[in-house]
Image (tube, rainbow, N blue to C red; front, side, top):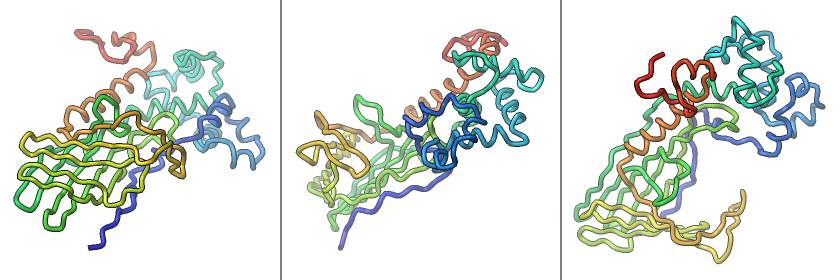
Length: 307
């Protein structure tokens, strides 16, 4: 059998929501007003201005631009329709910035980000089942990957490993729900296939399996170590180069020590992540509204408080 590592690919639900704008460009243009962005030379807008700021400027200057801004302010409990100017100033004050009443593209992007964060509700794209089983010639493991003592970049994930003893290989497929941040071009979830790989089985005992990648040319190499007796399923990542590794997209630094990940039951991890999102979204309501609800600075309603 000719076994090769499959290319990593993405299945997008708003895939560009995960794409990032350049930090330097974000800092450079964030204080521009919409009309100032549109007055820049066309070549500069195309080559230098972050796409998210061009979008904010275009939307704000459109026929219905003020209505879109009022609606976003209202969703965050600012009085956007009844007192548009006052709502804009109150929003700027909550950002800790000068209440000029003229929103910059950076402030407009924050407004859109905060309003859209309210709609990132709990979703379930894949099963969070956990467990492993092994027979004489077949084994499977499924669950959520977490890195021991570190935060994984994509905590909401699902992995399925299938091992075939006669063919001496395992398939490893990991899918993750990627969450947008403030510098994302669009505020939507995206589903990404993080890994779709084949592993060579190096050990198959009655209750244990070890395996290594068939293709071992990456910056780091990942070993699977499964114990079905104790229901413990680990991945151990080690350096695969003598120095820092050039990925073609940047430099990946060497690990100071092996990085150990574990496949676990993911319910608590997923629930904690969506709880964090909910608390973040609540913290974006207007300060006056949060004060009326007795919310602390984190945005959570105080125990026993009433509106």
